[in-house]
Image (cartoon, rainbow, N blue to C red; front, side, top):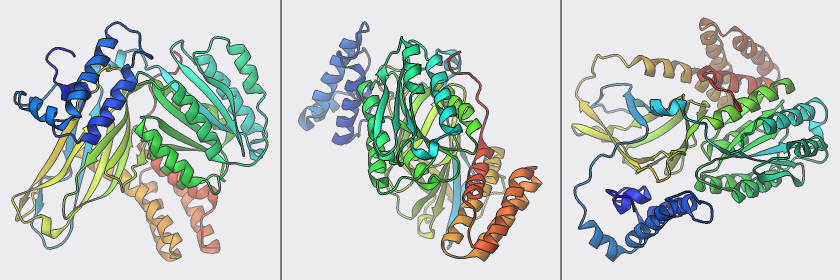
Length: 494
């Protein structure tokens, strides 16, 4: 065990961690440091330290005896920056619900921005169903070959092609004979129907073969069609991947793919989905995804929170990188990755019910933040987050911070299109039209004329057909989401 580190620090857990959390932390640390996978000097000793810590903390009696020997807990230095911005300085004692927003911002230290890019363990899962025939398949194969050529010696790439069955085109390995592998990619031929679970399952096996905490472990799914009957299997697989720190990015090509399904599939692992309108955009977006993966500083940041009565988390959205809504409903929120040169920003919306504001201060969040930094051999100790807000009889007149105002103005646009879709599902065409009209007006005032024009055209379709076109619906959804995006600053393979 490293000097001046206690057992809790070695495993990367808090002193009040449950037995399940200790067991999970041991599994993750042992997987990263196991001698069968690591031969670097000193890592065997680290692995033995992890075993020693687990043996002590997993036994309740030994843990109690060990806890009695510990000095008071200190705030450790952290390999990331951390900031909270609130929409208002205090809550008001009211007899009606009130909203509170805060932005969590996490950033890599300045030294990380010039550090070598993280090694990759990535599987490309490519739809080769009949609908991919022609330009789409040609561009996908050419881009996969470009990715292969850009690989560095430390990168691991695998390629799976699927339709109603899956085939491993390139197994996960450090590849040397790239010319032979390029020929295998060129031989992919479209046929069959779309069954995404077949492709995902094969892709998971390839990534798991080389699973290593020192690599960015990720699956990139490209599809142009809908899968039928296996959606729950896919989502169950995504939940298991999240436990292993493996992310999924979904990319839908054209019109016919299910954006709602692909969104949930990706966000369940802290990933995101993307809309590829035209085949010629495939290369740019796929290479941008590899660029971002290579810049990853921390993978799958998670926030575990405890239930607080009359305080409801109603919405969460990742502002950057990869703007995306965050799936609620579980105790663990997957906030996504942190890049070397782009901080992670997540905005949270809370509904505070009247019964909660009866004291002078209210706890908004009681949770644990975990930031798994890829370059760190030992686990990063989790951050205990206990956010409180003062309660007063009258509101403060201090305006919200500009960063909150800007984020909420963009989020308002995205949520307008969400509400429009919800009204359409309920059969309320008038309500959906009203939301789209407000969205188009706001976009025009911000100079987003092309997206506003798309919305106005879709309103005509809505009046005639009682629904949006498939293409228009995706353009509006991903168009409003792209308003948050920041350009990439590095190039993969350079």
